[in-house]
View 1 (cartoon, rainbow, N blue to C red):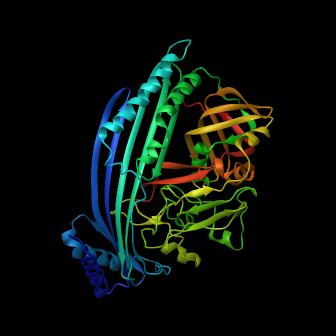
View 2: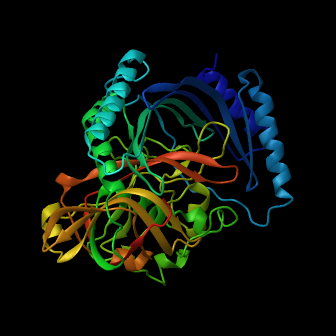
Length: 488
């Protein structure tokens, strides 16, 4: 059994070897995955991963080792120490960790209904009801030529019990719970395929699933997928757009979240997923106008139900709410303890790891576009002719996060300041990051603000896949380049 005394003994052994600092991070992760396709349960699985990772710093060099064998913690610490010594021979510059205060505390999971205690039959009934509703919508639609219909739905749950301790005196216990769903209605004909989906991940218990109104939502998804299969392609040109939170979340993620990660700016991701157009000097001598005065974006680790919400990150740094873009002006990077020292700042509390076997790297907390004022109808009223774009379909962005293209599932026509009811399929929009955010001239109020979870964000070598959240209200953008997605 792992006790506080055991862990303190292991940390002391690192100091006795000659380490200047060491930390231990234990994670016990449980997962449940359910999949329902075309009226049948196709997967029901659970798994558990439990282990620990140790970081040891010696004379400005770091060594890391991980194991799931808790009876050999002394050997794991020794291995991390030896790796730190070996790293000194190859390291051109010493690592400096920014200072932090020691912390102790227990922080239980914030949830009302433990998803692992909800009967499996209840979850399957929900999935079955959603599937039935999607098929009802499809059967009721009067097709000119009846296509093939496909339904797909997943429900998954995850619980993390995390313990962090270090030689500074920190001893922090945290628990997290998250639930996720992916619901898809797809219509397939000889020459086309159209989908409507709903994806979301939330920090919390099964109550988050209940709040998503999946049964009612599934009918609408199938109905709109059917309508899209016979809809015209979206017109091409420059148009004014209102973009919903269910598309804006990925725009924020790719064109703000990733470019403001300081490790990426400093080159850590260059070989795998690119760098960033930003530079450290953008905080001082080379200011950057990132968007219009309407655009304020924060990295908020205190946001309720956010997947990037925590009391402390995986380096023992408190969760914070920092401003990345203030009324259009770039003001801050997301940082961990080692890279924050490069720019003489303190860590923003973004040092996180996927599981126990990987190192903490800079990962997004909750990157949120702050709301403005007014209603979505008022944003629409300001458009002579344009579209409302909803739900991401695909995306691409260059390795400096400058040029991007996003495909959406559906475009709703706006004419003379009103939605006409007409829809278009295969819409895409493209642009340059700072020009796009500079074209934002209105954001709806807090009443329309929505937090949307990204189900799989990959970063690092070896790859670490994590989930993050982004919040926004519907927003309006002027003269955006719009085209048609040719990939069906």
